Length: 208
Image 1 (spheres, rainbow, N blue to C red):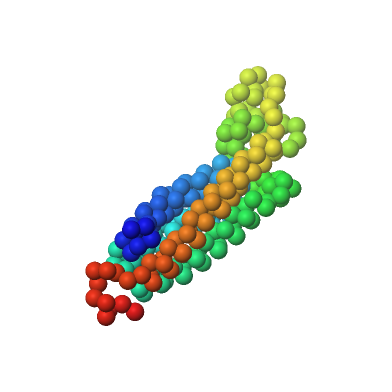
Image 2 (image 1 turned 30 degrees about the horizontal axis):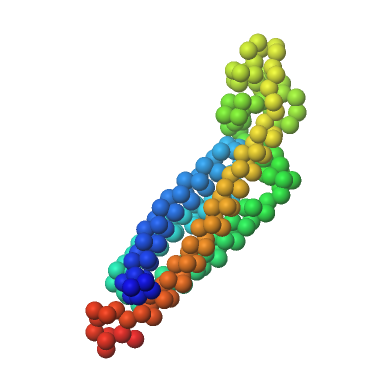
C-alpha cells in the first residue's frame, strides 16, 4: 500500500542506496574540481569531499535503521542527515556565489604560491605559457605546442584558462550540491514518517 509501513521502509532503503551513489559522485566531482586548476587548492571544495565521505557512512546507518526499524538509530540518523543537508546546501550556495574577481584572485594566489614544477604541469595541461603577462621563452620551452622554435613562442597566457577551470569546478560542485541536498531533506521527511509508523508484524506493546 502506497504510504504504508512497507512502502516507506522500501523507499527509505532505496534512498540510502542512492545516497551511497551520490556520495561517490560528490567525492569524484569535488576531487576533479580541486585538481583541475592544478595550481589552486580550493578549500571550499574540500568540504564537499568531506560531505561525500560522511554521507557514505551515514547511508549505512540509514540502511541499518530502516531494516530494523530501530527508533534510536533512526532518530540520530534523521538529526545528522538534517545537519548534513544544512552544511551541504550552504557550501553549494557559497560555491555558486564566488564572484569573477574572487576566482581571479584564487588563480593568482595559487600561481604565485606554486612551485616551478607545478607551473610547468599547468602550462602543459592547459597548453598555455606564463600567467598574465607576455611569456618568456624560457617559461615556454616545456610546452611543445607553444615553442616549435625556441625563439618563437606564441602561447596564450594561463590566467583565464585556470580561472575558467576554477569557475567550472565551482559551478558543477554548487549545482550538484544544491540538487542532492534536497534529496537529503526528503530523507529526513521519510525518516520522521517511518519512525511514527507501526510495524504490522511487531508486537503492538513494543511500539512507542
